[in-house]
Length: 383
Ligand SMILES: Cc1cc2nc3c(=O)[nH]c(=O)nc-3n(C[C@H](O)[C@H](O)[C@H](O)COP(=O)(O)O)c2cc1C
Image (cartoon, rainbow, N blue to C red; front, side, top):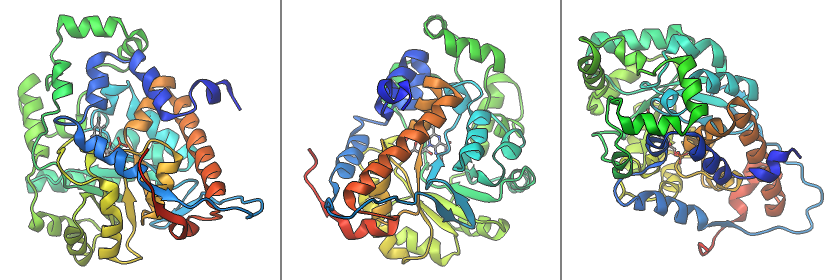
């Protein structure tokens, strides 16, 4: 065990260190949900209510944590979720995360609104890279974006459909984060209090959502606003069908909660469904995402690949999702906290603590493989 196993044994510890090292506006952009943040709390309570009957007298269990998903082997069933402007949360985040995913054998999904282009990261993540796409209305831009994503080496397309409008995220507003960010005295003070972040930012330069900006007209604020309009495509079912027809590689649809939507998507030939409520960042009054996961699994049958995210805080949460029908589990904030806390080493540390937590809990449950988890699952009172 390393010193970090004692000082930072959980994501909660990485979050605290990340908060100390980041300017407030960047931390609140990462950490806040919308409204009273009840959606995020509901996720936590629902995850805590997923229990397992402990097993005894099972001998020495050495669970295999590796998975095969869409024809690719992964050392753990883990995805680094797409995080817009990750490079503003921690400088150079996209390249660091893409390389870490390939090094550690987990999946990495780059956001359309990343501070890096597909060309910047495609070769770094290799077969572990997926690309998240916001359906774009302009047919020429859409076709060119898809061409570039594929040419950069990303074969798996993740289409996010749960952002029909911008969310208000009041805590982020209280931190005076404007879009595009405007340099203010408040911002300069916060940056001075976060020297590690500021020095790293001086090396990488100010982040821009470069992929969308490549298609934007005008300069400065006008270009930023135009880029925002380009990616805000207000997609409908026809757009989804069109995209399915255009993309020949695996296509996963992200942000699904309603089993009826899941059944429709399966019928349209998508290759995977990503159950997520954006951890309450978009809407606070929806159901806990984990409560919808078994309903979606039931609607699509046993074979359609499912990914789960929203509120995962440790290895046990990953097992909870695997028990309820997920094939892969994604974390957004967890990876960003780890990166902001310790740079690239933080990602290795996070993978280490998640793997150790999964192994320890699988022994308690008596599970030699993920297939053993559903049989031991019970409902428990959230503490
Ligand atoms: C700062 C931030 C930015 C995000 N940007 C995107 C995005 O650009 N595209 C997308 O599909 N999801 C985005 N998400 C959602 C994540 O992909 C993921 O669904 C969510 O963070 C998972 O919950 P967790 O953070 O509790 O692990 C973002 C999340 C955060 C925290």
